[in-house]
Length: 350
Image (cartoon, rainbow, N blue to C red; front, side, top):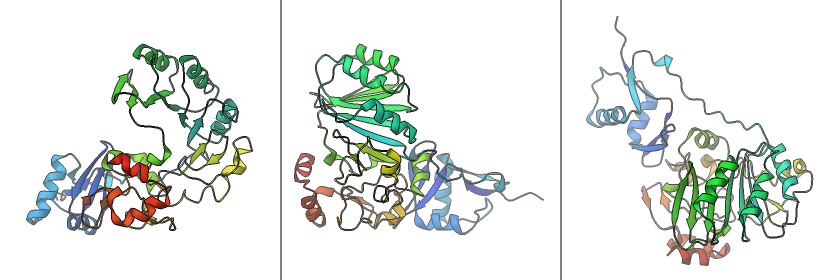
């Protein structure tokens, strides 16, 4: 007896239901596709066999998914298990932002060792003073004895930095992934040996962080699976200020001791970790959004500052209408913009 062929999405293509429509998140190709909620519900309710008499909308949805290589008909669906969305991190921390002035109030090399021992694999340096080639090489050499894998540098633009110098740095320091030059006179991106040098006219200001838009989406297995369990912005993140103070992120005000104290004591503080477990499914409005598992989540600037489960202030998307609007001109956000002192940020967005 011939088995009936059933339609099945590929394991890396996962449906996320929203208030008005659903998405199919292709975690392999970093892409998002839209499907009607009625079809998403149908996929959850029963198997769709190739021999079924589909209505016009169902047939069109299946055709679209097949043509875009998101799913196929199979006679042995049990041989295609779902993708595991478990998320684990071998260390306590995973990502660090280190702010540096011309005279940092802590030993950078020792701080990197402590962060590495705590599990940090990714480091962003936010540098607020002019750097030359020698200073930058000295800074990056501090990473050599650590287990940190990737480093991004954000520093002021200065004359004299040329493509050959960047090429030398990328060859000499394989962990160096990107360099951003802020305050530049042009906007451009150089691709050098598979790495990026980004020139931007913008400034280094933590108040600029937290903007939500489609270009910020990260549709991959790491972000998607982490989003099922943790806050994708703050989970495992630590910031070291130029004064040596420990924070969750540069845009937040609360501090939790110093980097030269025992780091495990600082990080284990319940206050330090209080945002780590706030998932998108816990957040007002975000829980109804079809983009929630590929979107970042800023807890530094909230639409309702008094509610830690309020959605990000700088999100202009309405999942109940499917429309994007400017977050900075929305009348309901006026109070929060004033509360956080973001008037200058709003003005710069115009």
